[in-house]
Amino acid sequence: MKAIIQRVSSANVCTDGEVIGEIGKGFVVLFGVGREDTEDDLNYLVKKITGMRIFEDDNGKMNLSLKDVGGELLVISQFTLFADTKKGNRPSFTDAGPADLSKAYYRRFISKCLELGYKTQAGRFGTHMEVSLVNDGPVTISIDSRLH
Image (cartoon, rainbow, N blue to C red; front, side, top):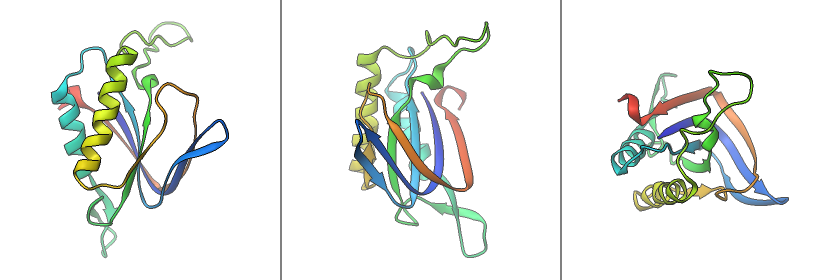
């Protein structure tokens, strides 16, 4: 599994002109599932993302977590994180997980974050979405569960 985390001061996601998810201070998480991903990959990402200390403390040092600042999550499904761009100019997505597997893991990621007490909003799996955000910093971090 792969995720891109963007620290934001606010964000929302729209589909068909309707806002379906909106947060204040927190993380926008672009979440992608690969063909070979397992529950271990999911658990790793949940723990890593919710524990990520990338908010500044009183000394201006990135030392505070989402929980420390009362932050929120906006989770967006993003199969394009598995784009293979080695050949030509048209990416291949053969490493992305099939839709049924990806949707199940996407939903479980959101459920696990909610169970841990994080206010979590989500996009709509498999639809065209417009994501608006104010990247705070900017801070953008890439995580691949296969590289730990």
